[in-house]
Image (tube, rainbow, N blue to C red; front, side, top):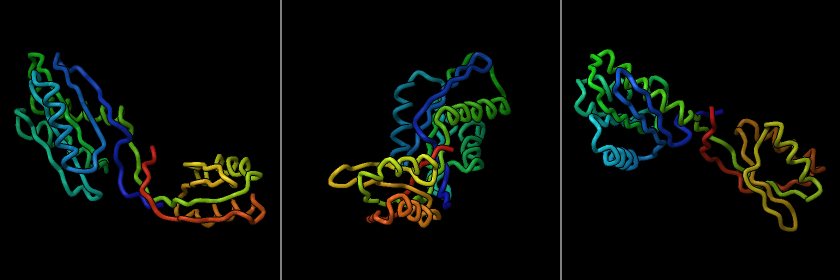
Length: 210
């Protein structure tokens, strides 16, 4: 199976308190730099009163775009380590904004690095990680008689049924690993006594939870 890249499943947030400083991590999957910048701006507006709003984002299957700011924290202690962490974990097409409300106790450079990477990891966990893979999408036309058998076959994990259309026959929109297309077709032919009709086969990128 061809895995293009890893990203996050959904937008999420997390919060931790370290030495009386409150850190809030906001995370979102994005496809473009414009999306990432818009998200950063929205969090900065939301937390105008925060001591720092530290942005970090990575875009591209080969991490071509890496942007960050320390937003007033000592150089290299906030945005940089988070971008490095994302690249090391192989996670891209994601933006994180880490908001800090200073609690009066300085953390030192090492403490800041641990704090910002820590809240970033908490946000990642809250959002969930997914693999974006090349998947084969195909429509399969079958008689009503075989609909139950098709659903049972899907339950075994060889393929999934994304949509079902009921007309004079049943049309299933199926998704499976490109390497398993042959096996999926064979399964359909077996359960439909050779009457299944396949059409509109193409490739799509699918986000699959890890």
